[in-house]
Amino acid sequence: MIELGLARVFRLLARTPLPWRALHVAGTNGKGSICAYISAMLTAYNASQLRTESGKPPIKHGRFTSPHLIDRWDCITIDEKTISEVIFRQVEAKVLARNISENIQATEFELLTATAFEIFTLENVDIGVIEVGMGGRLDSTNILGQTSEFDELEPNQQNRPKPLVTAISTIALDHQGFLGNTLQEIATQKAGIMKSGVPVVLAMNDEAVTNHILNLASKAGVTQILHSKDTAGFNVTRASSKTNAAHARQQNGAMAFTITWLALKQLNRLPAPPTTQAACGSSTLRNEIRTSSLSSLAAALRAVPEKVIWPGRLQDIDLGPLTSYTPTALLDGAHNAESATVLANTVRARAGSRPVVWVLAASKGKDLAGMFELLLAGRPDDMVVATEFGAVDGMPWITATSAEDVKAAAAGILSQDNVMVEKDTTAALKKASRLAEEKDALLVIAGSLYLVGDVLRLVRSAGGKID
Figure 1: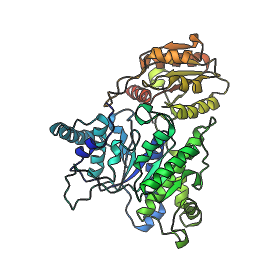
Figure 2: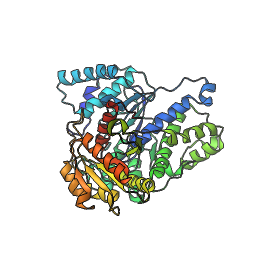
Figure 3: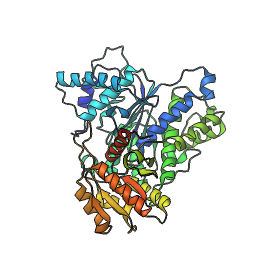
Figure 4: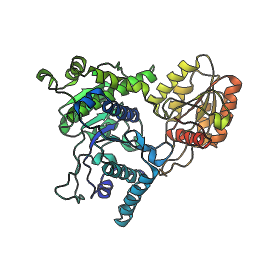
């Protein structure tokens, strides 16, 4: 069930203080990668000479992203390590009991959000890196920095301080049934996480979208706005038909760097800049990083995006234990036009003149024709094995498009003979592996993060490595 709103999660957390500070990230594409980069950058700061020489303790940080990939608890980490199943289930049980005893009727994602936030408080994290689930304004994560009539905390308990930083990544058409049918309508929902007095970092979007967000930021009382394109050490350009993985890393890396740097400054973890730079606008921050004594830390943070492996995002995976296929396959959760563009350009560069065998699945409601046009157009020798992902644990509202419908969409671009159906994911992977070996083709698995999760789970069960 998807039912946006904040009242139910406020009730779930009415007696839970959330004293940690959040880095809150909304957007259509890249927000999960941005959150992963932020976590890795905080780890890099903890290991830095600047931190150790300052005598200040490491920053303990949690991360909450969605959806999970393999296990429901793998979307919650502490210091980049997945929370244990035992702790997850203990805290979840308390949240579920509260939901039942008070007849809150919370959605599955609200229950998961409350569980993650309770864990962060239990673990005494300093920072929570939080990815918005859907939209922003009415997403359950947006209780951060807000109070409600349901709060039952003691007056001396710190409840929900405002986030340290909010951020909005690139915006594209997705979830139109919930967020709106135009980029500006969707941007309005994403921008709902902005808070008065809290800095916001913006990715490079369409100019009209950016101007719309800037107008909303002004109305929200945001006084400090930084743009990823102004971040020193990154080459950020607007997404286009030529956008590839390197472009995405630059955009998302610049976002993560600026968010992390702002957070460290606000936590007094960085030496104060000269007074002429104290305003810390985009251009001033750029100069501060270039000219201060912090260049070694900045270099360490900038190096993070090339090192982080974010599962299911252009991931090379060994299917050998499952299918006896010896080359690595490319696994990617691309499920809308922008992410499909990145995948398509990456595949073209890797495959060269070789054909590609695709294993494709999708959630119901996705624009299959538009996505497959980007992936398959101009590739007459490619082959598609259409499949379906299974039931998604904890997300019963998510259902797969039928394999027959996936086939029909792909057959609108490729020859009918080049598209086939295997509903079972294991059977689909084995068939695709055989075809890839026969044709000396690149094997690519894509179309949905839920398919990614199924594949990773299958490989793990077969004794394979998934990271």
